[in-house]
Length: 319
Image (spheres, rainbow, N blue to C red):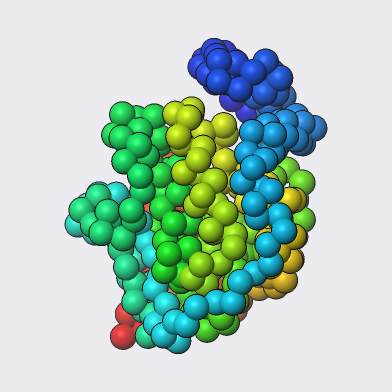
């Protein structure tokens, strides 16, 4: 639970912003979540209002896509679809753990090129309207939300697989990921999240010009024209949920995603319980290809050493 003084500060900042930009109902829902410690009831109520707001204000875009079926996919060079990674400061300024995660991606990629985006080269691949870059430069768009928009733009324009920088790949990537219109990690239903675990945004793939990313790209560009802050930290999930509920073709593609094998959060838990060879041995028994590492959490020194040792050991074994 958050301390009372933190809740008061959040209430003032987040409540004021929501009231000014989105109205009293959404402001109240956000404040309720803060003081109810993100209870299931308060989160579901907030999510219902968020989706209602987005549906009402972007109904013209939804109408445009609601009757579309998935278009025939353009030809791509098989086994060469890119893997996209983003670290604003570039490889040289990656923390050691993120650098090791990057190495794991490059080892797991097979014939797929791994393209690392940074402040130096992102505009070589992403052609956002100037007003988006201007809002980012002014601090109106957070780096996390810019990253959300970058990934859907890339997947629509080029196709491929997006992996957050903090994703560690434990095995060579299976080719079926690149051969379906949309791929993500699907887990057991969990109504605490607007995604209900039907997808994740830190591992998401799509074929070039797929309908979901086409919608999301257009939706984000239209949203940013108004200069408002993102309606929620998890607005990316809100936008996918909006598409899922209102565009039949998107719903069909997300529903066909198979359940993820293994637990993509297992490694974080294992690091608090296992060390050295025991950790590596157990890892080989796990079936997940992707692990989301909470790299910036307040690790104890021994936990940090275990994480670094595990990743380094894996690379040494593969060489």
